[in-house]
Image 1 (cartoon, rainbow, N blue to C red):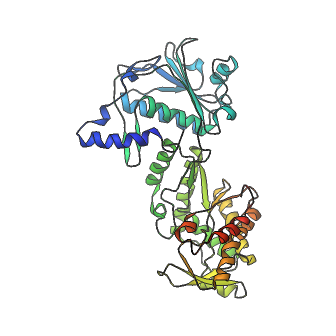
Image 2: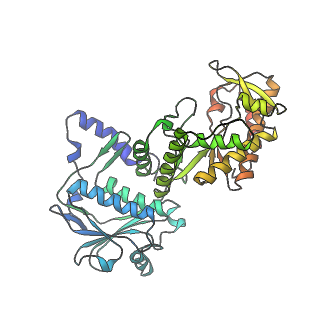
Image 3: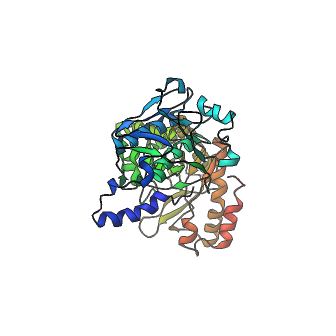
Length: 420
């Protein structure tokens, strides 16, 4: 499975078809109306979905998604049960989950009817899909190596077998009165273990438009992330404001109480993060950059500072030197407060390595500051989270090669250990 998924290739075709006046919503693969496992016959359910007794929230979501799209395609709503014994006699069975959570799938693995979904075989996000005609009734198995692999198996069935299109600006859902699954034996292993999308939370200074989104827009975006099989999301939208206020309070800066707006954005951040957990997505959370305000400078006048601005668009402001102990301390406190409020996936973004910056220093001083940034950031991360990893933007290194010459880049990365 690659980042450039098949539904994205269909998007171009879909645009041409729509431009020609074709009702894409009516298109469905020719073999989708019948197959080895009947799902819907003449707009009536012919299958039931079987979750295990230990089904996780992600697996429950996967089953709900499958039923919702089948209903949108055919008008028929599939029932969901928690064991094969609860299923209606004669109905096809769609088994969703893993051997650890679904007893029916565990029995198939133990009887060698399907292979075990191991990480060695499928990678951490892979999945397998099987159709089985013995023992009766017919079965369709949607099984992931981990939770999100099971969700990906459902989306693979929807997009690659039944022709559903998942696009950034909407979806295309074909319609039919009958629906089935042909003989399938699919083992899907991702080519890349981490598939990362910046999305709406890119550079905080220029296009962090996710900070302005409400819940419905965030949910739609996160659904698209899962449907297109990304697994790691930059999440620097709402919720950091209240954390920064708490950091300032712990560091003795003058600050007032939390505002109603901050409380609302904190609640929104909880809702976003809870949904990301349900989708089994990894989130990259923010850490503060070195720029500090006048209040910080007045509170810590003896700290080591320099001044920098953004291109020629902002006036140079106080910036904490990465070798100053307060630099790592500020990062540590932010991570501690953020994890206390929202939890952590041990992945952090920021500060960017001075992209598009204009320093008020000598060239020699600037090179030292750039080279020491990595060590200062990692000192703060590891003090708060020994498992923490830093996701570094590479934009600064290519934007201005004179500002970041090769030797300075080498010194920067020398400050990082393998796995950082």
